[in-house]
Amino acid sequence: MKYREFGKLGIQGSAFGLGCMRFNGAASGDSIIDEQKAISLIRRAIDGGVTYLDTAYVYLDKTSEIVLGKALQSGYRDRVTIATKMPMEAVHNREEMQALLDEELGKLQTDHIDFYLMHGINREKWEYFKTIGAPQFFDDMKREGKIRYKCFSFHGPYEDFEFILNDWDWDMVQIQYNFMDVENQAGTKGLELAGRLGIPVVIMEGLLGGRLANAPENVQALYDAFPVKRSPVEWAFRWLCNHPQIATVLSGCNEAEQIDDNLRIFDTVEPGIMSDDELKLIDDVRAAYVSRTKIGCTGCRYCMPCPNGVDIPGVFAAWNNKSLYNADPKHDWNMMMIRANDAGADRCIGCGACEAACPQHLGIIEGLQRAWEELRV
Image (cartoon, rainbow, N blue to C red; front, top):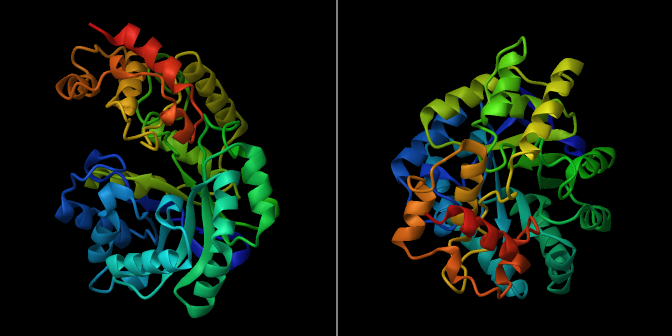
C-alpha cells in the first residue's frame, strides 16, 4: 500500500480509502446489508494496509456507522482514521449538533472521530451551518478531543467551493473527482486551489458511481489498443493518483476480490506516475464517454425519495445502461425493479423537488421524460 501526505496536517494515510456507503451494492439510503460480510471486508482492507475509512450518519439507512464500529473492535480502531459526517438537515442548533455527534461516537464505539465533515455542502448550506454555530462547535469539539480535524464534503459549483475553502481554516476537504469530472463541481481548479492552500483532498466518486469500471465498446477499444494493458478501474485510479494534491481515493467494495484488486492497484501508484501517452489515452477515453453518456447521474440518491414515487436514479441508470452498454430495458435490473414497484417516470408531475436536491444540478424533469420515451417497451 502506498501512503500519501495529508497536506498541512503532517500525517500520512493510505492512498486507498475504503468507502462504507455501498456494501452489498446498496446505495446510500438502502437498508439491505450483510453485516458479517461487511465487517469481513472492512477488516480485510485494514489488514491489507488501508488506514482511511469513510462513512456518514445517513449511509445505508443510518446503519453504516454501526457496522463500521463493530468492525473496528479487537484492536482495529487503533490502526485507522475514521471520517464521518454531520448532515445539515439533522441539526438546527448546538444541542442537536452535540446530540448527533455523541450518537455517532456511540455507533462507532470510539471516543473521537478523526475527520469530521459537514456533509455535502455548497455555499447555501455553508451559510446555514454558520447561522447555527457549526464552526464554533467544530472548534470546541476539536479542543475537547472529540474530533481531530474539521472538514467538509462538497457538491456544488467551483465558485461556491472557492468561497467556502477560503472562508474558514479547514483541515481537509472531500470532493467528487474523476477523469470525467475535470470541469464539474470543484473540478481540477478546486483540486489545485486546495493544493495551493495545503489542504488535503479526499476523493469520492473516483469511478463515477461505478460507471467507469466497465467500459463500453468504443472506450474498451482505446484501452485495448494501448501498449500497456490495464483494467478500466486501474486506469481510473492511476489517473487520480497521478495528482499530488490528492491524499486518499475512496473506493466502495462489495467483494473480497475488489478489496484485493484495489490493494494491488494502490500499491503501484504515486504522484506523477502517468506518462504523456497515458494522459493522452485518458483524454481520448473521456471524449469517447462524452459521445455516449445520456445523463451524468451517479446514483447518489440525494434526489430521493421522490414525493410521487419515481425511482429517479433507477430510470437514469437504465437509460445510461442502454446508451453505454446496449442493455435491453426488458432485462435491465433497474427497469425490473421500477416495473415491480410502479416507480416509472410516467409518475413524474414536474414538481422540481429532485432538481433542488441534486448535487449534480441535472435537468432531471426533462431527463425523465426523454429517458422514459426510450425505455418504454
